[in-house]
Length: 280
Image (cartoon, rainbow, N blue to C red; front, side):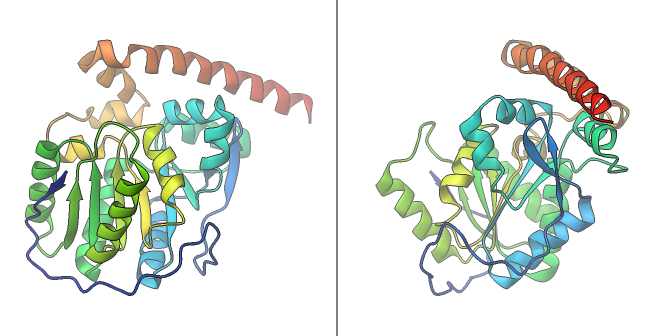
């Protein structure tokens, strides 16, 4: 379902190019390191936002996702998903435990994570300043209405080229083609995806060769910035305890995600640490 946006600026549609699975890029994307088979980017907010903006301005399609523990374990345990996400131009360390693992296993010396909701705001601010149109895809109509309204209130110059709440199922081929046409005709250069893990990553891979824009999968950022869900206090986020806050808020939906995947994460980290010690 398409949602009317509060943005009043008209955006000129570019000429559509031939879709390709593999494209040349001039952007210098950050290097990656292996975390349980998943290639995570050694990056920070400024670098990742800069790369996304550079690609958007240059008209170079790309895929960026932000991975917390749940996403890392889901991809690590699913060979097909792991193959897909490892083709992305960048995967930012969304969770503090992911950053800690990168620092512990690879001595990356990252001082902070790259949190999806914060990345979303930084990108929207920069997009407003540089007049780069964005597209919002995911969640529900009511969340998108509140999200777009809140973003425009925060960044009045932001051009929201489209808002769309997809059906809760895989798109048909005809629906996929129609979506590609809508996004292209909107003139959007940055395409935010809020479908949750792993659905948003499967979607991003499927459309990587079909959308002429930078896809950025940001998970629950839509709900947080729409005000329909609360974020954990800063002290909990800094200590890697955001999962406790979210589990307490939605125990029935999230208990398995956090209690099971967190345990698997610790086990994999211990195993990787032992393997690394043995190789010294």
